Length: 277
Image (cartoon, rainbow, N blue to C red; front, side, top):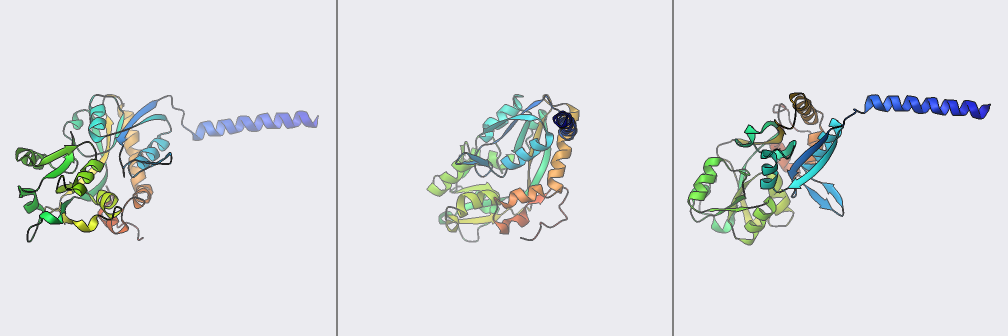
């Protein structure tokens, strides 16, 4: 009799547990396709363990969505093409792009100032951001099919003077910069730290701030064709929560120089300082 009561109790407990988890975990038959920049520091694979400043935010977003998803790390140009040709639901992190705006909705995640990194060997007296851009002896590294952190006007200007060397990834840009194949690039603090400071190359380059004081945005693109309006609205709300609850800050601390964190501001939190380190 005791065994019978124990069996009934166990079955009852199991049923209750299943009901609890059914309520707490959303049921989802949907499988999302998520593409993202597949190079460091956005995406890092070391000893089979995945991490990265963009990858961890993407994973956190999809964890909160509660659905299965397929990861598609790629070069920026390949990720952009996949999104434009409706082969992915979500693209993160991306910069605002007039072409991609036709195929998806941009949701801003971070804002930060641009900087111009230039080899000290080619610097002239009293260097400035604009002076280096206008110096025809200085060639720049940029991304194929992607603005990276250039404006459209800057890209056209550099292409017309045959001063823009376009390569697949940010790693290729900094490799060319260190090797002297290009003399400068436009970038942001996280890349300068990852590719120059960590490799002990920082002292060979000057970092000039953008004279215009403009900020660059990065965020997620959500597909118009592959996602319903309801799905996009839910994703936007989850993205906002990741910014607001401190998760975004926690992730970005891992990949930035602590002194650079003051330059990174979550959207909608521009008036708030980042927590002291």
